[in-house]
Image 1 (cartoon, rainbow, N blue to C red):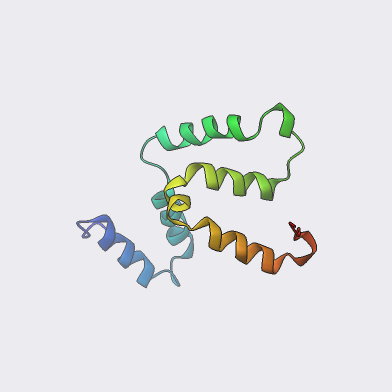
Image 2: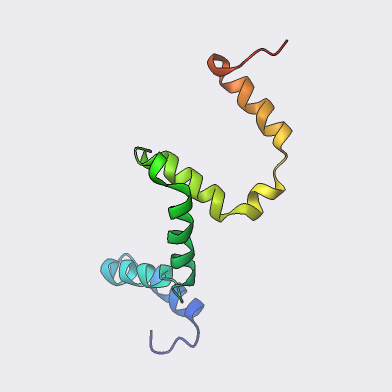
Length: 101
């Protein structure tokens, strides 16, 4: 590992030997997932206060996770075509489909 000049080289080195050093490989994987700054973490907590307000205290973890993902990753939602999503949802959720006359 000392001979590796970049993080990518060190990652490849450990990945190739992860069968013989599984704990080091796992620790290195955790190290690579740590945020460099706390700004993104603070932003996430700020958004969570907006999404999970006092009216939504009994919200389940799966729904909270989905709403936070939608709130934090707005650039992905901007690229989606809402008409296609609504059509797909209405085809899959026949029990929830409403007929408008």
